[in-house]
Length: 410
Image (cartoon, rainbow, N blue to C red; front, side, top):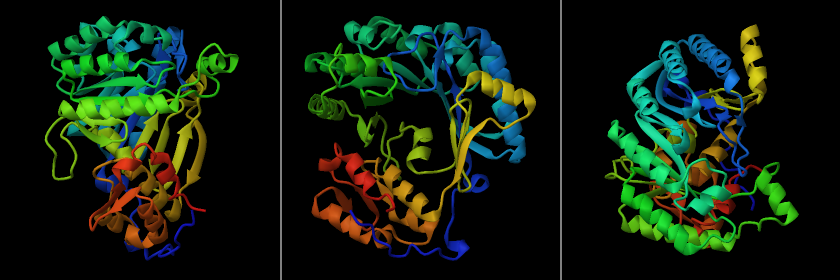
């Protein structure tokens, strides 16, 4: 699909405001690359059997966080997301060091959202109490299913009842903002099993739910199983049916479907988003600035994007030498930044990309920049352009990737 070239000439610098870390604040992603056991579908940069490196890794990580914060004059931080891997395999002393480094290196907002991922098979009361004491105020628990056979297929180390018990334990120590992750579209998954998983999740009444379709990523054990014919490839038609079932059940239960894969409770705010929408992920979807720490982590700040090399020991060794453990770095020009802002923002189903925010950032109206592209997508019934925003039409919620790609530069 041809792209409009209207108004793509670089405007006066006062009109183009790339993500400015010291004006709007930034977000931090902290990667914990350790798991008790790696799941067969996972292609994240994570490793099992590295317990002996926990202390050295956390030492390097804290040095990295404090040093980067000092180098950037301690910018304000509005969200922190600690992911992995399984952050809850770490011991309380590791968490204390990590959170102290964040507060030393950066100016953490008093109302900052601080999220930790948690595996139901690696949590206990002491760990939950430690997270609460250190300021973590949001949990993201990787349940994946409430069916034990599906959990075994996915290689999870917990059972369904253990996941529910972990959720109740988190509630008992004071967590009032909990997300539960689930996967659908497993080979030969039964719709009635998926329905039961959703109903059990709704019964627990979490503030947030994330639902992801199983994908077969190259290099994973799952990909090898599919290639050998041991396991059928996921059926996209089945996945679409299960997604639509989730949309209906969660809507009936009072959850707001605010992003392609995410639902949240709470009244809608002036920004059109539910109270318990994940504030950290909103930074990604709005293409706003963030710093990533740990092997394989990515950053996007002040017109540049870069990533950290993936080796855990390489990361530890580089920090010990005082070197930057970078894998790659690239400058993002204005045209690509606009395109990525469109692609990411359109994932927000109700809000989409706000025209006023786009004008404030780039000095032009998105309807002028992408006039021809938008017109073609409107003709096909895939997007809706209003005086205030551009968003996906409901019929395009299952066709998002096709729409997003339309905004890529030629």
